[in-house]
Amino acid sequence: MIMKKMGKLVLSALSVLGLAACAVGSTDEEVIGESQEALINGTEFYGSDTMFNAITDAINRAGLSASLDYLGTGSGRGEQCLEGSGSAPCNAKAQTIAPMSRDLGGSCDSGQKSNRVALDAVYIWSDKAADQSATGATSANVKGAFCGDGDGDASSCAAFDTWGEFTSGSTSSSSPLVMYRRDDLSGTTDIFKALTGCTAFCSNVQIVVDDETAGPRLSTDTPGTSSLVPTPCAATDSATDCIGKLVGANASAIAYAGGDAKVASGTYENKYLWINSKEPSVTNIRKLITDPTNAYPYARFLYLNEGNGTRAAAETSFMNWIIANPASFEDALTDAGFIACDATLELNCGSSGTTCPRNTNL
Image (cartoon, rainbow, N blue to C red; front, side):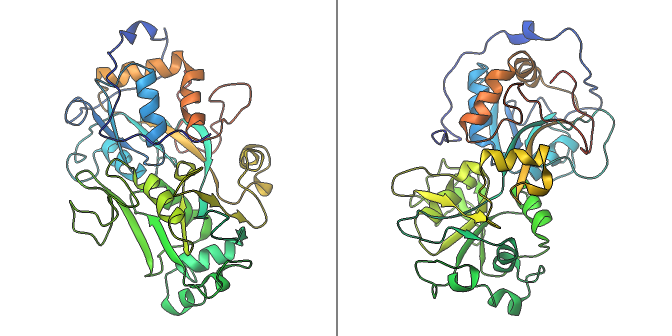
C-alpha cells in the first residue's frame, strides 16, 4: 500500500525520545573527518526524493521529528553532502547518513558504508486504465521514447514520439507523448540511464525538480516559482509525488519514477506499464536477488548509505533506532510502497557487488 503523501513542511510535532540507550554494544562505524556543522541548519539532511515519505515516516516513528528534517531532493545531493563534493551547503561534509535510490558512486572511501535496505523499481507511469488503455511497452521503446538511440538524437527521438510509435493498444495512437522525468541529481535518473543505455534525453522530455521555495517545478520555470503548483501538484509534494499526479492528469503522459509516484485513486489516479511483458510485481522485483535474468527489467535496491564525516547526535539516535527497531523501519519502507528484500528477515538485502561494505549492525 502506498502511504498518504506527506508534506516537507508539515512534520508531526513529536517529542524527542532519549534513544541513546538503544545503542548496540558494538559498532563497525568508522567516523572520521569534520562536518561543516551538525547537519544543515542544525536538523536538515538530503537524500533520495523517492524515499521522502518513507524516511519522514521513519523519523516520526523514532520520535525524532524535532531534531531531524529530511529534505529529499535527490540521491546525488545526498551523496554530495556525505562527501563535501557539491555546492553549498554540501561543499563540506554536512551529514553522515544519506537515503539513496542507488549505491554510492566511484570507489569506496574509508569508513563509508553501502547499506541496502529494500527493493523498488523504476516504474513507467501512465494515466489510469479508464483514460489510457495501453498496458505495457518494450524496454527498447522506453529507451526510444526517452532518449532515442541513446544520446537524444532528434531524428531517432522522432521515431517514438507518439503513443502509436511507443506501444500498441493506446487509447489514442496518434497523440504525441507528453513525457516527464526526474532531474540529474536523482538516483532514479542514474539507475534509469544505466538500465536503458541512455546517455542524454530527447528534448521533449520535461524535467521535474524540487524547489525548496516553490515546491516541485519544471526545470524551465523561474527558480522560486512553479507552473505545476497548485494544480496538479501541491507545494508540499516531492518531485516524485508530483510526477505521479502529472501522468494521472493527462492521458497522453508517461514518466519514469519510483514506486512512491503511485496514486491509487482519485483525480490523479495512475498506473504502471508492464515492460517486456513483465509486471513490476513483488515477485518479479524480488527476482533481482534470486533470479536477476528474469527480474522486472528496471528492478533496483534502495540504500541507507553512510559517509565518514563527524556524526551529529540526531543522526546517531536515528541510526541506533533503526538498528534496534528494524521491523518498524522496514514497515516505514513497505508502507510507502517499497518491497522488503526478505519476507521473514528484516533489511536482509545482502551486500554482494556493492561499492562499500555493509554496516554489519544492520
